[in-house]
Image (tube, rainbow, N blue to C red; front, top):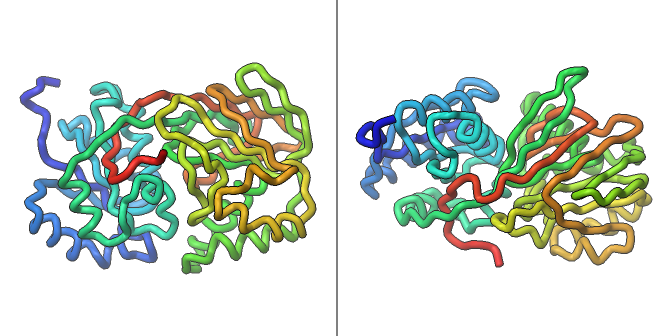
Length: 316
């Protein structure tokens, strides 16, 4: 595309259903603040799941290079997938930002994106950017091998079960910031461990596991720190493996999930790596950025410094 055809305006993707329909209810407030701060933009509203992937792709084809998500982590994941799947320009030419109206907001938490709209818009106006890594996961849905990019954290095993149950609860109209935690406790009653083979850059681990987290970022599940030392631009995944553990121990250790001390637990191990292969018996399921995907065999790869993001503070 001719450089002259590139727009300086921001391309806003609004999820009207995010945050119990706050995306729809609060858009007038947000758009008024955009006018106050003299931010030029066009706006598009999503109409269904995965629509933000298409919208991001279309915006880039139209010449936009600054994409702002008004939604939650799932909408940000879709915008990332649109940006990385397109072939108009290098993905590193694209900048992603966020005004959080979702219920989790784990990606924004890592970069100091405030929950109040005016604070988030000031950060967009400041246009402080940095390249961060992205991940790609190949997985199976039935017999079909599929792929998905992610910007924050992927989870396997128990975590994927909780995410799937939480997403179903949302589809049925259940609301509240405690929804993930409630479904965590419900899922704990029935979940069984899975025998897995994990290969990290050629190092093989065979064990019974409760859950596995693959992190670019640090926060998931509404503030849990399952990969507490992850650095978003170091070209490495942080991998946390929770081995076979009694259900009572899980409940007793929940505090460690939130305060970042999880890796001190004797049944939890942490690793770093670029390429990860996971197989299991029975099948183990995977989610990425809170989106339920598919099942094993699963392969992860890191895409170093592949997308620009607008941020306020960067994790140490």
